[in-house]
Length: 319
Ligand code: BYC
Image (cartoon, rainbow, N blue to C red; front, side):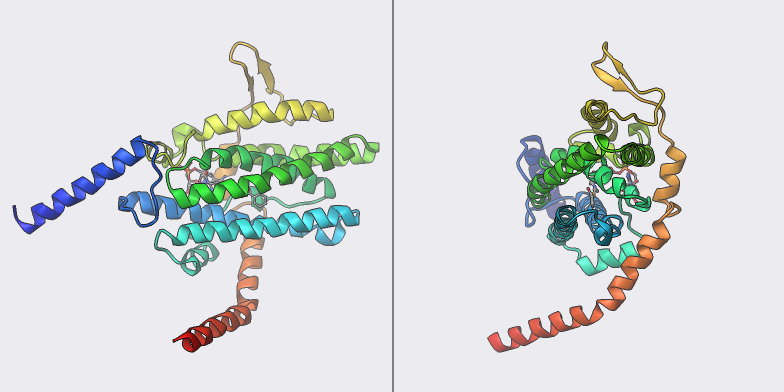
């Protein structure tokens, strides 16, 4: 057996060992052998997830100075800080795969890596903040609970903590919209307007339909994704419509109806052209969001320089 054949056998054995672990639901850990395509796919998904968390701080932070009470402001501050923490866990999980957070962050700033479409919609009134907690974090939980069982250990473990916090976010959002739903006619109208604007974008968070999702089949085979985009979207709708009914509000979907035969709600066709436009960087707020993040990067350079100088000095002192 020549050297090339020997290394091919070894690679085949590594691949077999990896496949066996996936089949047996044993986590893949950072130092384990993994196929390059699995590593690249994880950096892509975890990276875009991390970017979503930190870009997602912007539309909510927009209302920190205008929260209607001290209590609402304290809750919103805690939520926005949680999102920064989620970004940090996820950038750390991505780094275990061999990328640097600086590299993937710069790719996001350059428009070469994506972040969730939902954050390219503006927050126009206070009800939007309640609706984001209820619908956006609600959608995120449905997606992320499934990711707690992702085959890559560092990603799955980050998701467990994130889901606990998302659960608080969803509850605070629903509590806020419940108060508005029982309020004045003006408050009810404001809430209905927010639901009308965020309903479809929340459904789009789950990604393209299964037939148009290029990564789903392989990600499910690798057990990174445990459910398809359409399965999770349906689960979110089934969870959410009773909550909508309890509020006495409606969805902007004339086709939304309970289907007793399937045990699911049927819903209308999503505007996939809109999702594609937003994903391609041509949504209402894409430009504004990236500009805000580029500005923060530039204006924060002194913090990074100071932190790096401190780290170098400590390392030199320890040597
Ligand atoms: N928006 O083959 P597909 C939060 C991209 S933050 C933008 O189905 P995949 C919160 C996709 O990346 C919650 N892009 O992909 C934070 C791919 O593009 P590339 C964020 C989208 O990966 C602050 C292409 O379309 N959650 O909760 O198998 C405040 C083809 O799609 C979207 C996550 O990130 C989209 N909606 O499945 C409040 C969850 N959909 O990479 C709340 C983790 C698709 O080929 N991510 N694309 O250029 C996932 O679970 C999966 O990545 C997705 C997409 C289900 C999103």
